[in-house]
Image 1 (cartoon, rainbow, N blue to C red):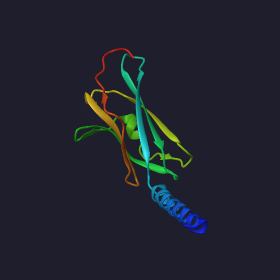
Image 2 (image 1 turned 120 degrees about the horizontal axis):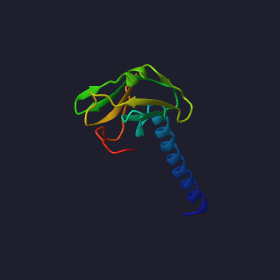
Image 3 (image 1 turned 90 degrees about the horizontal axis):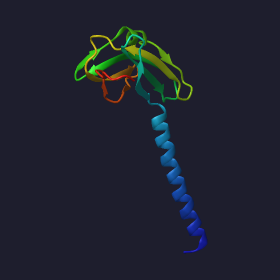
Image 4 (image 1 turned 120 degrees about the vertical axis):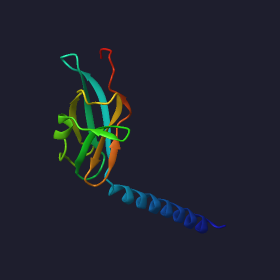
Length: 136
């Protein structure tokens, strides 16, 4: 082949690759994405608290519709988690909502924190043992 055909082929392959990448970016841009991270914190009265951080990974603000602890098919909502409902997490990059959840008597032994947004996106934290007896 001559040099013109090689350059044309190279530009055609580059253009198609950039077109596919642009399509994928536009497809993912309009999705609601959140991440839930839970970490234990010591409580003053010998109890156990959890710092639950909800990170907005979307390009637009999202509103939390449901915030609970799930264990199997059951969901538990403590007062601190109920206050986090209807909160809006802004559109800035990685904007967060932090909630302290105190373990009360109704918490299951094992579970995970779950967040559902009004857009329908659901995110859960890693599985957690809530019955930890050792000091943190």
